[in-house]
Length: 81
Image 1 (tube, rainbow, N blue to C red):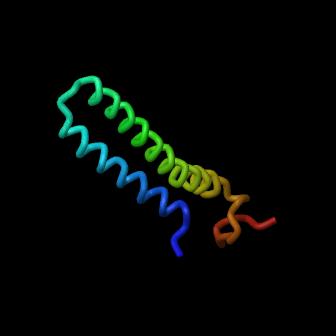
Image 2 (image 1 turned 90 degrees about the vertical axis):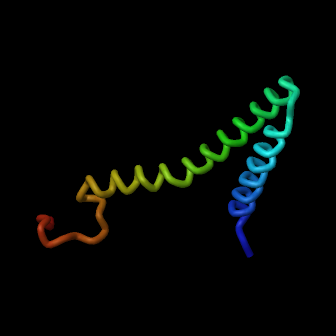
Image 3 (image 1 turned 30 degrees about the vertical axis):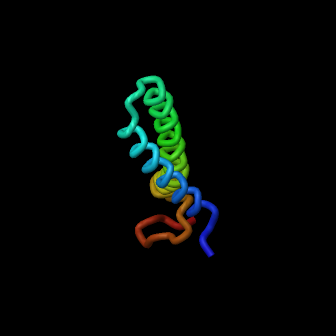
């Protein structure tokens, strides 16, 4: 069974696809502006969601790789105390 996170990804991608198709078909500027705003908000949420997946792992990897005392497996080149 897929996680709820997977379902959120699928729903967000489908919503962006539907909005982009509808935006191309509209001629009224007021509706087009409103749907463009909705499209940008959904895209912003998707990018923020992606950042919450990617950034914490990268920050933790940087911190733990740059501080030898945080490594769980000591290498032979380090002085053991």
